[in-house]
Length: 91
Image (cartoon, rainbow, N blue to C red; front, side):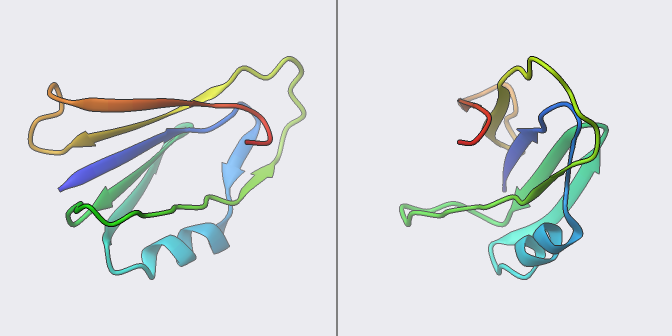
C-alpha cells in the first residue's frame, strides 16, 4: 500500500466533491483529512501513470502563501523511499 500525503495551502480545504471523486477510484482504498493534510491511501502502485486532482476551496484569505508539499511513500516502510514534490499556488 502507498500513501500520498498532500499538505494543503493555508486557508484552503478540500471540497467534498473532490473527496467523493477520489473515493470512487478503484485504486483509492481510503482518504483521511487531519488538520491541513490529506492522506490518500492507495491499494498498490504499478508502472501505469496515475493522475490525482484535488479541488480546493479557499475559506480564509491568507497573504504570502508558501508552497505546499506532496509526498508519496510506502505505508509499510515510511522511512524508506519517499518522493516529494513542492506545489505552488496555481500549479
